[in-house]
Length: 159
Ligand code: RB5
Image (cartoon, rainbow, N blue to C red; front, side, top):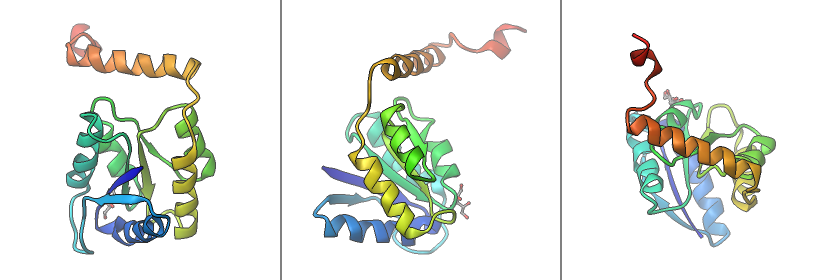
């Protein structure tokens, strides 16, 4: 298993904390930045991880910003990305079991570090349940395809 991770400046300290934890557990990491506390723009770092997931180059990634909201909004623009902003162990587990989330998003300013690590552990070890949840993911894929093909534009087509 290899973890690809990125953050903005707000998530930088938590990212380092996670990198230390992952290295202690002999889990290989690819750190795509940012590399310090200087202010940067979260979309630039969401793009780095989400594009790799979207293209199927990596299976899973982790993104961290202050609230996790900006990273989630950006990452979920990419086809095939199911980025889940998790605040507790329940959302971490269900985002894998039900949504097969392929990017874990964390908010460094709304989580303490021990909880963030527990969320990471839970997320990494929890499998996707499949079954009825796969049917729902298939519907998301169809919506993405229909938007791409210009078939879902209700506001425009009703004018
Ligand atoms: C940066 O100040 C902050 O806006 C960013 O980390 C994130 O919380 C955005 O959603």
